[in-house]
Image (cartoon, rainbow, N blue to C red; front, top):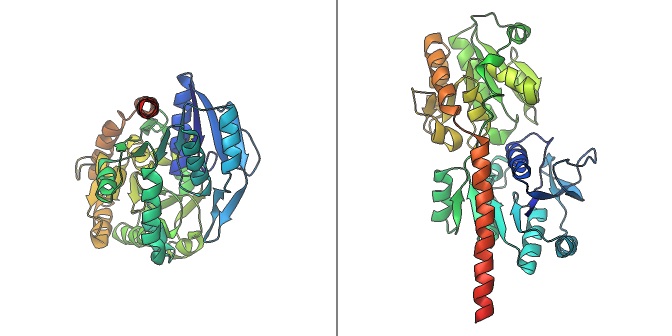
Length: 385
């Protein structure tokens, strides 16, 4: 079985889409699937070892967000490729120019297509003063996904929201976590010492891009309020982005580590005590189950992954998405109660330890196989008319 994966982002880029695709691709290969990878030129020009064929297309940076690249339109090139090496199904992860080219080529060749809805465009547009474009984008996204044989979303709430907006053939594909890598045993006393934290000082952690769409202003306000409530608090921010300088000015005592990956990231999670995540732009948010698996008490809005995984005051703290003051209060109260954040962290670990990527990968493969059957039936039916 040959599957083509089309995405405008891929590892080693650090974001939720690239991370999810890396996990799914690894699982497909472990099941004997042959992969084609279609993506913009990586910075180093390296080839992905998982893919039988790693096709690079011209990439360009977004004018409003230089760190984000999209692939140049290449429909004719993809038609030539897929005529010679036809995939059994195509998964399109992003709706940029490359994604549109892949969808048009697939429809022309009658190859089954599954798409992923990974990004809440409304939130990004609002944060970058592009609110005028939201109605146009909504229509375009709905048209894009309704031309696919299936669209996969990470939560039931997201599925309901899309169906209410006129999307068809929407299914839930949840996200997993590597509960062996992200584990409380990774806690590192030396790393905490480098942060300036004694064994009993509480450490509040954030992991993610430092950018406005992550509600980063509320993060800064919350971290500052927590430190006023508990002056021994140590603030650690893992990640980078255009807002780093302004946030560093707001949080002069915070530790900024830049992006971390692999074992280093696992040690950063496990060496903290609380995870503060105010973002509302995610369709899921892989960092939430990673923090939970690491034994951290998470403070988050009742949204995306947190909505699916956390029960308030059982294995984390959940706050209504329209209650920023409540978010600040919940985090400020938690950092003063070591017994509470320890209990929530233990329960969070238990909740997250059952979220297997292998199970998610099997579900993903099942969706790809299902659309092949649907496409075959539709083609056979048409041929009989």
